[in-house]
Image 1: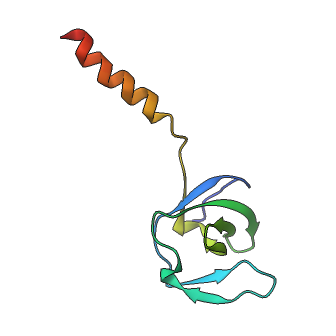
Image 2: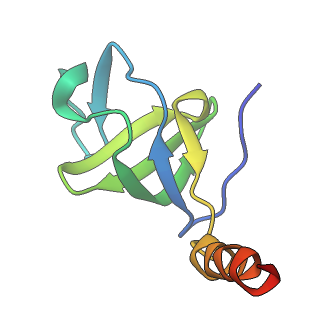
Image 3: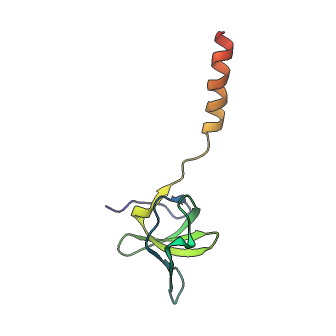
Amino acid sequence: MSKYFTIGDRVTLVAAPPYLKTAEPMPMLRPGDTLQVGDQGIILDQRPGGYWGVKFDRGGFLLDGEFLEKVRPETDHSSGAESAADPGESA
């Protein structure tokens, strides 16, 4: 099952594919260790077959949606501060 992303979404690499295909007019194969699990990129476009064009710091690559996960907005910092303040107030 392919995941759905919107162009411009920030995504993270959750699993390392055996190889990477560049998102260039003349695509080339790169070793799977070109990107590391946890690297973040931005969705550039959707390609046929459930593939996504993703721009990472090390270049643009075509990846199956199963290797990607949408990055959640970093609003946890404010809720974490509130949670830390609650125990102090009740003590």
